[in-house]
Amino acid sequence: MMHPEQGVLLAGEESHATPAMEFSEESDGPAVLLRGLHKSFGSQIVLDGIDLTVQSGETLAVLGRSGTGKSVLLKLIIGLQKPGSGSVRIQGQEITLLPLDAMNEMRKKMGFLFQHAALYDSLTVEQNVAFPLNRHTKMTESEQGIRVKELLASVGMEADLKKMPSDLSGGMQKRVGLARALALEPAILLLDEPTAGLDPITSGEINELILKLQEEHHTASIVVTHDLHSAKTIADRLALLHEGKVLIEGTFNELEKSDNEFVSEFLKRDS
Ligand SMILES: Nc1ncnc2c1ncn2[C@@H]1O[C@H](COP(=O)(O)OP(=O)(O)OP(=O)(O)O)[C@@H](O)[C@H]1O
Ligand SMILES: [Mg+2]
Image (cartoon, rainbow, N blue to C red; front, side, top):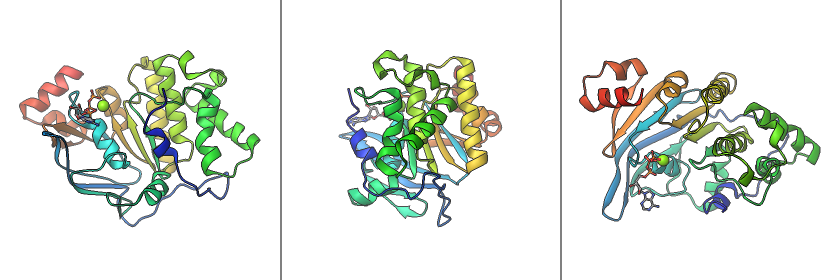
């Protein structure tokens, strides 16, 4: 099934000017700035005042128990859901009140990997990754073909480009989703469990890829993960969500030194 939100994510009309797209490093504010973010569903309060900042070139890992609102948080950042109150600024621009066309324009700066990959079922692997290139660039078919192969090679999926998503394992779907999220060379990457269900070697490769993007292209990344080893490897800072709030934020070492009972329990259980 096609992800219901996918059409919105990939919509937008304006094309990038050249195949060699530039990474956006506008400096009118941090890559992502969240202030006082609240989100409820009916009477259920999921996020209860979240403040987070991610600068370009920085990777933030978001941790927390299942159901604490990590995926919801990413969806608020990309504008797929609206907060009850609070502010989401992308490179200095408030997005919570943007009209749809402006929001779609803003989304081109952001690569998003859904928790469940959300590939287009009726398109091959190759077509899935080419989709944003087709839509948002003026690349020729052969330029697209080269770029798609590069992207798939970067996630170790170059041999499978003719397969349909339903013929891939969960981990392979995830890697194709990641290649698609990287297609437009986004300034901001939002990754929901990029290494879940992957073997340790593939996980390591994905982590290296995220680090490389950070070093070479100054990408800002927010990575939701249950994988503490990955979080430790890739993140400059970690934020632990608990009961709607950021319970603690800091480096892995700072979290380890915390004497908060939940923090030490969380690090112990998941490591
Ligand atoms: N569209 C929605 N409508 C109603 N409730 C929702 C919606 N989206 C999320 N929720 C609720 O918000 C809470 C947080 O969900 P979320 O998916 O963000 O959790 P999570 O931290 O990503 O968990 P996991 O680690 O299992 O992926 C859950 O109780 C979920 O049921
Ligand atoms: Mg989730």
